[in-house]
Image (cartoon, rainbow over all chains, first blue to last red; front, side):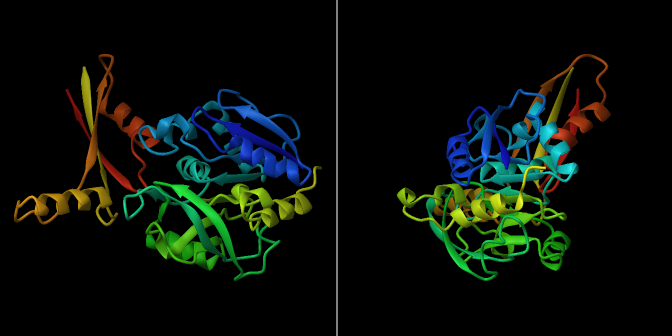
Length: 222
Length: 76
């Protein structure tokens, strides 16, 4: 598996994500936001957490219009894998690769703690390492993680089994407790919680590791 | 020439910041504030000849996220 991790000015989880990919044997290329192409042979693009462009205008809005994001969108449209975590999820909604938007947390506070998540579907190459319905502990760290979409979109996400993770105890006001969603071809994942921060015993929890192991098992370089 | 873009959360989208402002006004003794919605104003300094339609494209592509926000454009 060859993973590209996008680095924006203000990204701060890019190296954590690279380490999590490397831990399951992936080759990792760090890709700067001004680059206009992805390295040859990239299977999965990781859009990391952080505060791209200082969260100016809206979280993820400027990053979504950066040169590399056009390539990320093209990669997804070709059926490539794209995984956006935290700010990366915000970027993917801003690009339109995933529906909905992330609003300010309902309680207005930045929340940084480990929370229980329910694996809402095991039917994806991201979540196949879990049992559907399993409860896992994954850290969140965000100010704008309140998932919003119109009622039709929420119904469609449920109807197509595209909700990947839900919060066990909704911390931020997200509709339907949604913590992560999949694209219609199930190859684009956006999630606010940080599996890469729960992927090594030194993190204090390893419940995120199964996501990366599942990816490494499914995404075989062609 | 200038344009002024007003961006607001759509009706029906919870505005927790506006709610916090409403609570603060109530706590300060300002009665009768039934709702507060907070948005943003973006002023653009434009080449002459830029049309309202041009600015609306900017709104659609960047300045507003039409999933959650509505916008209005004032030219001049």
